[in-house]
Length: 334
Image (tube, rainbow, N blue to C red; front, side):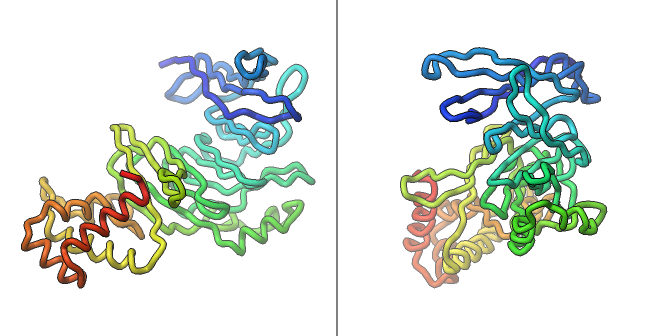
């Protein structure tokens, strides 16, 4: 199967008052095995107050460019298994730095400061850093288990949320002390001399959340759906799924919703007889995530069951329903 495609990029501010747009072009791409005759990074200049584009130049690549992104006034690109930083030139983009130690194709990129989070197609999320004094791209942390990454987003400077091809969403976090150690190293010499763990990077991220959605999650974004409300993780799936992951801010809410979920697992059986906990932990046991869809079915229970569950929670039926509605509206507005 051969196909042509264009992959868009955010605007790059390369010079003061001069914005450009870059596109990754992959003509004659062969999906299996993955190859292409040549890839191109096309650079355009905005004209007439952003209403027109002019082609500046196009740069040939030796592999399939799947993801490109703005990075400190430059361009960071995942070209096959290589992570590269390009700078704009007069005739083409100039390759300034490269790291070719990734195990498979790079499919996602997220950046903040000098840190780059790289989503490997078969090997989960890598934490990399660009050290400008030595012009190095260095990997300093990775995941403890391989994952087929589809989408990812940075939750904060230490934390990343990602999805894989098997319908899972997970959140990994880097130890803050490791992060500070890497940031305080101006040249990256300390990273180069550290011994790798488990045939990988010298440091490992810790999984803090895991949940099986049941649909292939194709995008994840950190957004605020309500004016002045808390930020949530909005995700969309291949089969039309749209959902949000809402962070709890109080221990009281965590205890309430977790206890309600436990009761709903016994009261609300599956149509196909599948155990709910086994389903949500289909590949990896569910961790630190409560199934809001299951808790919302509380309103459809009979009055006697609602009263029994509310009694276990030391609340009235009205208070339970009001609390569920409040959690939903404050996060999503619906």
